[in-house]
Image (spheres, helix red, strand yellow):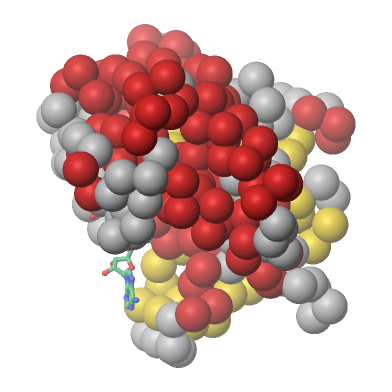
Length: 255
Ligand SMILES: Nc1ncnc2c1ncn2[C@@H]1O[C@H](COP(=O)(O)OP(=O)(O)OP(=O)(O)O)[C@@H](O)[C@H]1O
Ligand SMILES: [Mg+2]
């Protein structure tokens, strides 16, 4: 489907076991750069597990066994010499509930850049501004950067969390159900934001909302019980799925 230069992340024959639980089975799929790929499927099918394989977040879980190959720009991310902190800077992650820290709006973004070695205020100021601009929050918060991030609406806090990821200079942004705690207006705002982000970044989103996947992604992966059942251009997956199980799921009869 893609030439090598279009592929940002490539997965070949990936298997993952949580102890005896075989959670990912023979996953082979590619994530194209500067596009949005949605991961859909019923609860427990392995979406979050697959997402966490991409920045080695599963390494933090005990008794996990991973087999197969994941490459970022052609390089094996599970190779023994990989600096995992650096990998997680290149592949940032946004979670289901916005986790704004009980700090000022400025500090929420600045702390992320500091973790990656930027320390002086002269360098931090433009990073904070640019990150907030990219998520469309700058104009709303520029006059109250010193006030607590916890006073922002939940939707704004999620934008702030995305700004925090952007401040570290990522290449890929992973979002695990980023809108599940948000109201419809904030959800649409995040979807618009993803369309902006894909111009610069490779975006991968897990969602339970068929409407969201259909509206906000270029490619869709449908999973069931740890396997990929269907993968393709989003419009094709939704309007002319090849597998009857995909059809059942996207029309709401399964899952
Ligand atoms: N830390 C863990 N230890 C053991 N089993 C786990 C762990 N995390 C997930 N699992 C199991 O792996 C399978 C896939 O879980 P995963 O969380 O990836 O599914 P999901 O598709 O993200 O589900 P949801 O839509 O509910 O978030 C499930 O059977 C789950 O119980
Ligand atoms: Mg999940």
